[in-house]
Every structure is written in C-alpha cells, then in structure tokens.
Length: 421
Image (cartoon, rainbow, N blue to C red; front, side, top):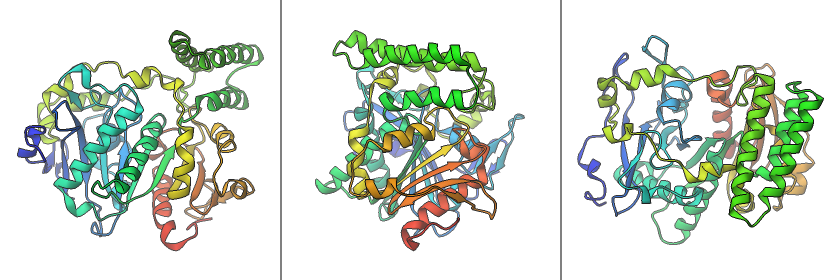
C-alpha cells in the first residue's frame, strides 16, 4: 500500500465513541480508502465487526444507491447499529445487520457523500469506472485488515446501486481469475433494482395504475412520455439519448405530482428529507469521531452516470452472475421505483441455465416470524422476495423483516433450503 496515495493510512481508523451515544461496543472503523496509486480521490468507509462470531460471519459490503446521500444514512437510519432520533440522540438499533455479518459501507461514487476527489478528472464517467474505483478501495480495505479476506463476501445495495454492484461483481470475478488477491464473493442482494430501464420504466406506469395513483387521462400522458423515451433511447444521437434521460425523469416526476406520493414509498408525500442527519454531521465532534475529512463537505460535482441513469442497462452482466453467484432480488412492495412487476418482466427476458425452471416456480407466502410478511420465489441460487408494508428502505420501514431476510439468505447457502415459509 502506498502512503503517498492514501495519507489516511497513517491515521487511526478506530471509532471509540459517538456524540449523543457514548463509547461504542463493537470493533468499528471509519476513514478513507484510495482509488489507486495516483492519489486522485478517496472513498469514505464505515465498518463494524459482527456482534457475534466475527471470525466466521460473512463480510457484507453495502454500496450506496444515490449520489446525493452518504454512508451515514445507512449507519444511523437503516441497517447499521445506530438510530438517530429527531433530538440528535443516538440509540442502539436492535435490528442492525451487524448482528449477522461483518458490515462494511463504502460511500460511492467518488466525489459524493463523504467521499472526495483531488481533481474533477477523477470523477467517474459511468458505473463501470465507479465500480473499478470501488474495487480498488475494497482491495485496500482487505489489505489493511487482512483477517476479513478469508470471509465469504456479499454485495448489497438498492436502486441505481445495482448497476455498480453488477459491474463490481464482474471486477471481483475477473480479478480472482487474473491473479489479484482473492475476494471470496458469494452473492448479491439487490433491492428494488433499477437495471433495465427499457423494460422497467413501463412497470412504473402499471404500478401507479394498480394502486390508483393516476387516472385514465394521466395514464395516457405517462404512456406518451414513455413512448417518447423509447424512441429517444434507441437513437445513436448523444443529444437524443440525453433527452431520453430527461424524459424518464419527467415521467417519474409526473407520476409523483399527479399522485402526491413518494415514488420510493407511496404511503408518504414526496421529498421527505432526513434533516436530523445533516444537523448531526454539522457538529465538529461528530465529524471528528467519524473521521470525516473537511474536504468531503464541499458541494459535489455532477455524477455523469447518474445524469444518464435511465440510459444504461446492466442486463448483459447478469447471466454470468446468475450462473456463479447466489442472487437475492428483494422489494418493498410500496416502492414504485424498481418495483417487482418490472423485475419479473426483466427476469423473463434473461437467458441462463435455470431460467425455464425458475419461471415455473409458484410464489409462496413468506412467514419469518410465523405470520405472513411477504411472498417469495426460489430456485437453486436465485431468490425473489416481496416484503409487505415496506418502501424502498425496508430496514427502516420493516426492520425485523429486513433482518430476517438477511439471516435466511446468508444461511440458505449452508442448509440448502429457505428457513421460513
């Protein structure tokens, strides 16, 4: 490892306490990982060892799903060991995912969230470049703390992060075969995945109609926008493809405006911000405790891949992943974004060895605690789960079910069958 490329190697990454909480109980780390030897930028990370048996628990790597968010949104308001209340106090999360896994959050893409870059030329232009930077950062983490390299590794994320996950999984598999230090990748968890816009965008209209969010005239307007998107999206003209992305965003915004509902959770009004996290990070003591560099607080540059999010399809990456890895597609049923209708339509277009058998499976009731909490399909290494009464952020809206899902998915590789029916 090059200390010139990453001067943070000389600093302690151990977290000892949080303002508003006190001393931490588990072994936790945070700081910055480099993206390469040219010292072009640094990705923020946060890590907690598993609460029990960390030597054998898997390594779960969470990839952020939105460039405007940061890793601490997961740490304090989702899967992490802590919950931040409106008064700024931090409480232990009884449904934290670190109960079953060594939990690593990487703040990507470079230049967003709490990550930062030294020059705009290092800003990733697409998801492939972003995944390469994340791969280097993950390798650096495992070089600095090699005891976690021997563990089975799983990549998790939601929404647009699934593009990065798919590219990163390919990077890891190629690196393992190409002589790079091995990362024992075993599977992916993809929540409300946005993978194939040419297929999934149609399901947003269907979802809105099914839930009576739009009426007949509004549906016709939405379908007209969809048709314009499809025509622009197949054009070789860069200007037309840029217009396709604008049309897709316009369609999503149009449905939100017509319905008065958040596309990530239709039970809520749109535009709900998490102001308490920003207020908490405004405290110098909090930034110091979490090892946040002051350069990370500057306004981020536009993320080129996100600007063209609806132009990119990662479908071609998945047949290989389905043959080699254990894949979990999970959905909060109240999220229009990446809803299960679109994922089912997309899965029906893919070709892999078990495709025909998987499509013959019947959906069954999922009962993690003895009561119906969702529906699932499974064949061999492919899982498809719908969680009732949950939005995009299932760990916030249904924390117990989210934790049960994780535990059952991780142990299914060992026992060979789902744990709950």
